[in-house]
Amino acid sequence: MENEELELKIKELNDLLESGKLSEFRNALIELNEVDIAQYMEELDGNRLLLVFRVLPKDISADVFAYMTSEQQQVIIESITDRELSAIVDDLYLDDAVDFLEELPASVVKRVLRNTNETTRNLINQFLQYPENSAGSLMTIEFVEFHAHNTVREAMDILKRTGVDKETIDTCYVIDERRRLIGFVNLRDLIFAGEEEPIAVVMDDNVVSVHTLDDQEAVADTVRKYDLVNIPVVDNENRLVGIITSDDIMDVIEEENTEDLELMNALVPAETEYLKTSVWGLAKNRIPWLLILMISATFTGLIISKYEGLLMAAAGLNTFIPMLMDTSGNCGSQSSTLVIRGLALGEVEFRDFFKVLWKEIRVGLICGVVLALVNFIRVWLFTPAEIMTAIVVSLTLLATVILSKAIGCTLPLLAKKCKLDPAIMASPLITTIVDASSLMIFFYIATNMLKIA
Image 1 (cartoon, rainbow, N blue to C red):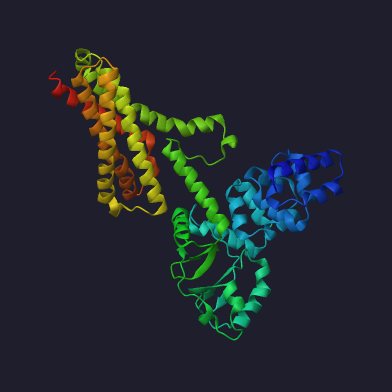
Image 2: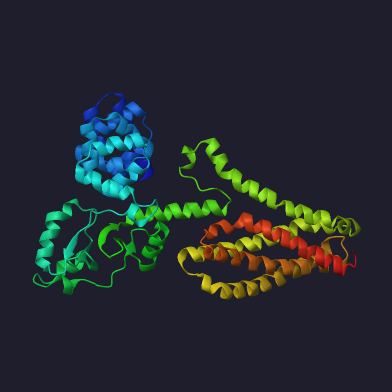
């Protein structure tokens, strides 16, 4: 639904709700997609939220509940009866139930588990025991499975009988008598295969899977690499225990990209959305890196103070410091951004260390020569500085560009090797390092070329 159309619909819903025409309100509400209904309910206060949720038909209330924010879900859970709570949990897909339980206080979780049947309760408890952000915590058990000895006709019967309650039926998985994953079959292939053909003949045994304890970022990389819609999850004995669907993978990719973006801008990753995070929470996420960068910048001040005599003796030399530091920082940031992105997409590995370094040195040489020539002409023609000063600044610019490119590309690779997030080695930290390096080079060249101790 387009934004303008949705806004008109929301206005209509608000008018009907204000006037108490609940029957007409209900009919208008169910015309919306479940996602749009959850979005509309975000603007409602506690009493109206509960009223609107209870107006929803039973067959879509659980779907809408799955798209609500954790705060809204908690309000609903704390307000409804045990019978209503049991119905919601029973209608939710297991992975959605686990997701919302992970965000709730322990007391609320106990109430939810107390009002579910024993089988569901045991499954939820099993899922909650998996490490956070692991494949096991993301997976769902709502998938279709066949045995290798089934025929296509038997498989279609299984699909018709059980598929209605599954989260996806596009890809079905094939297991042996010990539940070990041996292949998969697409619904399209199943439909066009002969009814008496064994599934073992129709299936594709070149199956890609992940382990229950694999990190979610590794899972997303695998899905992206092999262009998958869903991916099966196996245990230590290669037994099929669940699958991870595309909607969960997209959530992981969004979460990991957001985390990398925050780290690259010297922020501690936040757990909640910006507008839902308190001022204190935002400040707390920013202060640690700001302190680290502020203290590390002290080295820059120490270098400048050490060469204070040089700056006083060579008039105008200090005016070029900001330009040199900015240029070196920008060069380092360019290289680090490309390498971090390459690492995230699997295009670059640590074994490519020297290839990347050699490439960036050559890029830095080209960029440095161009920048140094332009800078020499600028200083010589448009400033009162002497020609020797122009040469010093230009040579420094050439050297710092090459060094900055080298530092910018190597630090993320070293972070990856040390099992750290490469995004940590991004703009703010690299800028601090190359600033100090560029000053050291500047003063070394100036001291030797201008013959001033």
